[in-house]
Image 1: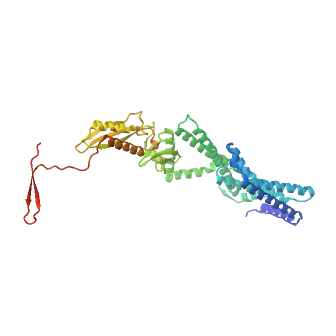
Image 2: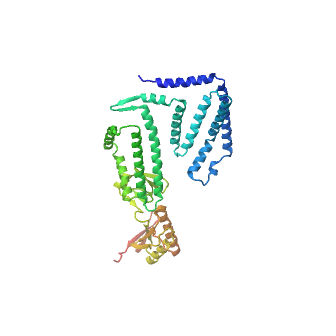
Image 3: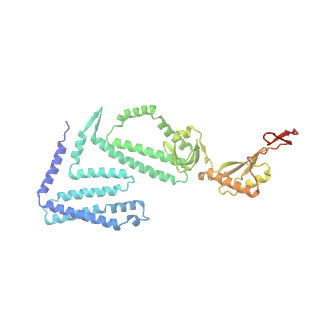
Length: 449
């Protein structure tokens, strides 16, 4: 049977104090002062919503100062309420020193704690974490103000189960949860700061920047978890069964996850793929936008982001268009009519390809005569570009248009799909007596070899 006596006694003391306040004549004065504080807060909120613009005020200021100013403006009605109620309480005690002001004290402390917590929590960027931290901190502050914190902690500690030599209570779970959320947020913020500083470094390659950032973030998160568990009094050796269960889980169901994580570390270490590269994996082509611990994000030409598991990049063939350099060679195949002069065709094609804006002319383009038969002459145009991230298909289209325009100017014709049939010999016609229709008979002559 759990002992709730301490919590019941605390609630009883608070209830008795409120009952005394309700029977006193000063209670209604305190209610009036609180109502005046609420009116003043509402008036302040209306004025600020109409005239205050903290964004324009703090334009160009450092980010922490802008956040602080915005938080103060947003919580100004609460601050005005606390100031008005505190002033009313001081005036009331001045005229009647024996007058109890418990209600005013509780109101100012609760609202003041809420305002201070919200101002401090405004430096947290994650809205969910802001709400969680603010609500948790205010509940703790409210229990402390009402004198119920110790009794509530004892009641939560009484709700416990014994797991071998380890005692798990609701109070311990609450402490660990709150501390763990705060520690993970702090570790994430520190990791993001380190990654930002690494991206500004000119001496490190993009892959090394990502690798160091991921390792630092993982180390900070691990350290945060261990520190929270240690500070909560949890014996880390008691978690040996958990590590064993994780090992079994890795052996049966998490092979792909671990494989992707290890593959991601390998990719970051050997620099075969790095942010900013242009790659092709199977039918996927695009720009490597981000590299995570489990997948990479490839921005395709149509604007979609393709998430490719790291394991696919390690176990499958990957075409890295910008692995060691940005220059990429492209091939264009085209055919012309065999009646054209091949020297003229080749020169016209070279002159046309040099007019395409994205062609990298530091490496001269080349046009090769690669095929000849009775129907067409085949050519292969090779040229280089230095910006594959801008697309490959589009530059091919511009190059074909340039070839078409040049051939039209030079009078170069393309192969015709129409085939000529030539008959040699004497044509004889016979007239059918019934149909009176001419019939042509062809007597072919042998062709000379």
